[in-house]
Length: 199
Image (cartoon, rainbow, N blue to C red):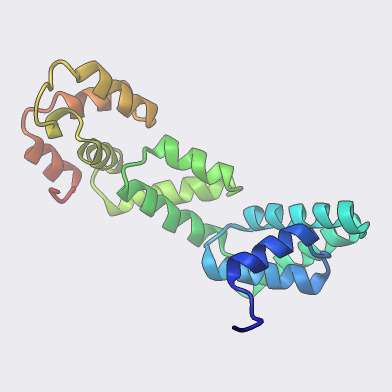
């Protein structure tokens, strides 16, 4: 039997000991570790690091202002180094969400929540429009196919119409587009028009 601890034991011990001191070195390591695992815009990473600074100030009485200044400098350095690129993040995330059936409104909401600037979101949504015939229609069809709504439903289509319209509405699609998808007679034609590959 070895003295080494497994990952879950180390995490439990770390939680018991509390947060680490938010030194510039620790903040940089935490930021790089996070960016190795997840793509993130600058503001989202800033929020995560500032939360670490706040916990450190509470538990270890470290200087919160110095910690915030270290975070600001670190974010600037990571941006200069190309490790943080909000425009690229916004475009990649918008494409990913659209492929999964998110509406433009839903994409905007998610990117705003992550701290992406509105002008970069506008650019990302404009980029979607350049790559597809009708990106909003394509996203609505993708969502309907994934959830088996309207023309993708095997049975009880008429009885479920209102529910299906509501599902698209909750996803951020307007009523006219929702009706166009849910009431479609020739789904293959609509998919071709939108540039969607039949699933």
